[in-house]
Length: 132
Image 1 (cartoon, helix red, strand yellow):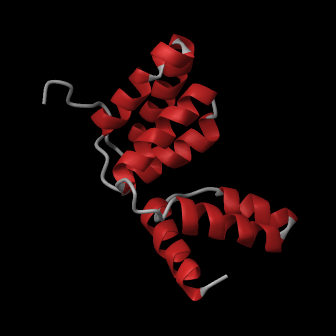
Image 2 (tube, one colour):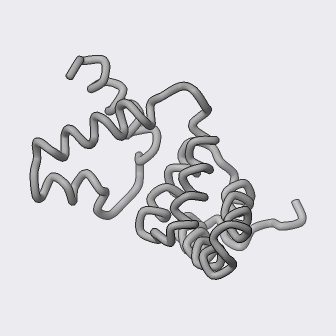
Image 3 (cartoon, helix red, strand yellow):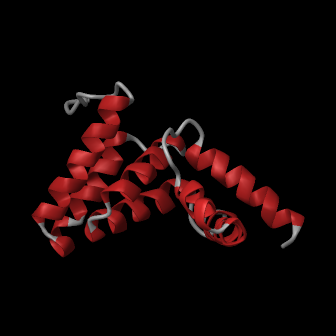
């Protein structure tokens, strides 16, 4: 793997996950297979997340919507944090989650909003100023 991909991986991982506490997927993968964990990380973070076709804010809102629709709350929490790290506003994240109701159903949306609320509470960003 080129030094460029390694640098992109480090840069993007820092952008998305700086300050995120708890076990990250890379840590889980590494516990089972360090070489495969590195390969996954270089591909996912260094190639996919680092692509410059859409802004990081858009990429994270898409990711939040997909994870909400799939009901993947653990990974959703991680990417809500990443969305905040790249500059998404809580109201934008909520809107991405609201949009999933049409395709994934209200229960999925509600679970996503609960995950968002939990993250915002942890970051002292709750309650939202819904009038502002």
